[in-house]
Length: 247
Image 1 (cartoon, one colour):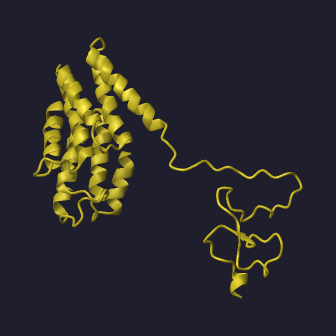
Image 2: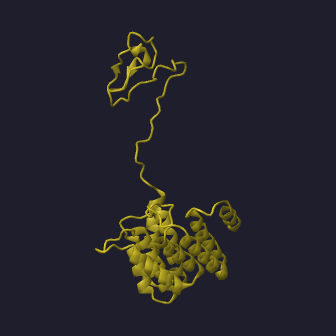
Image 3: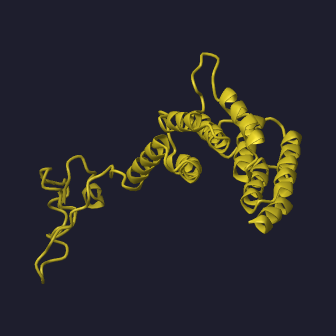
């Protein structure tokens, strides 16, 4: 991971994606417990971000602007276990994600920030605060479940390892499991395909172009021009006719 980040920096110094690579490097260093590399990576990412012009479309997913950088610092410090810095950046993320009228303009960022505050609360012994923040995050209207569940599982592990007998910890664990089961069995937005079963030796073109049973078959305008068995002799309603009808 670290080698790939350095190779990418050597290839390009002009795009904000390079800033995001510093954030990924900081996360990797946090998982290894290397606090110095985390800080160095975040400082380098911030310095590079400051040299870039402010983007015209900061809402774009692959564009990094100063407001998004707080989110990456929050993530890295939470993974490192630096709860004080993580909490400072999490509060900043919530503030930036909230519009003047109180509406959350970036609900996913705000939800992950609340989970980060929940992790910090769990590590300092405030179980009630940790579970309350976790429940609020999981109740967000718009959720990117894979990303949200990664942080929710961190909070779940902290609660179960520190307070395994607490009812609130068990309840939060069950809620995370319920959401996880729902995320792994999504409802298909389409009907499964039902193949046509033919008898052995049947004409392979006999069913080509056949409309589903729920739709009536109609003759195409090239009925007389096409030979028997041609897929263009039958068509679904409103389908354009074959080239033979336009010859």
